Length: 251
Image 1 (cartoon, rainbow, N blue to C red):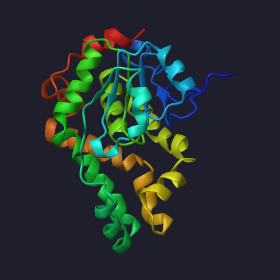
Image 2 (cartoon, rainbow, N blue to C red):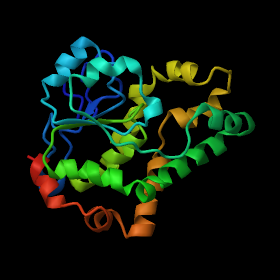
Image 3 (cartoon, rainbow, N blue to C red):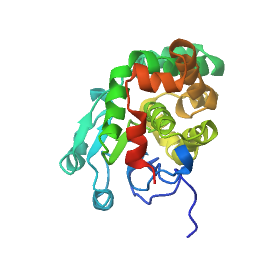
């Protein structure tokens, strides 16, 4: 089988969606990210037994979970007993049905998109502690899978920070981010059926279920405008040793 390219290969898991290896991306000094060290994904908690066996082959030091308690399920115990699964919730806004339904019922697609842009704009300001701890794990040379529920928003922003620290170019970072749309396309109707028990126009919900470059660009614009750019944000605001991160994962 041909290699589908860095960061978006089908890893062949049965019940873990949107799971990808960051390995292969061209990064700082002409080096590339080592394969099998940094995985991003949707919630792995409902993994099959075969998935758990396959994931154990990566010899993960940690599985880092950005979800809140309300997003978790009792049926995740098999996964929890198999890995060093650590929660560090990023609680941006209120994505509960009670909050979203009134907005969706009275809104239009542009208000849904604006909701997501505001959602992303909060990441670099309100959640520095969580993303600092995430990148400190990279400083410590940990092999990790990091995730949220759909693996697209919180995980997408975390990936942008990590790829930036590793010296990956902006276009490749955006491409990696947008891959969530392809990986989640089959699951989105199921998620919608679970979350919204009422019929809503697809065009209102689509901005919440997909990713757009404008969302991530909103977070990156905050980093540029409020903190003097990504380089300064990583080194001085989050206090990350970028060289050390690069030496850990680049080959």
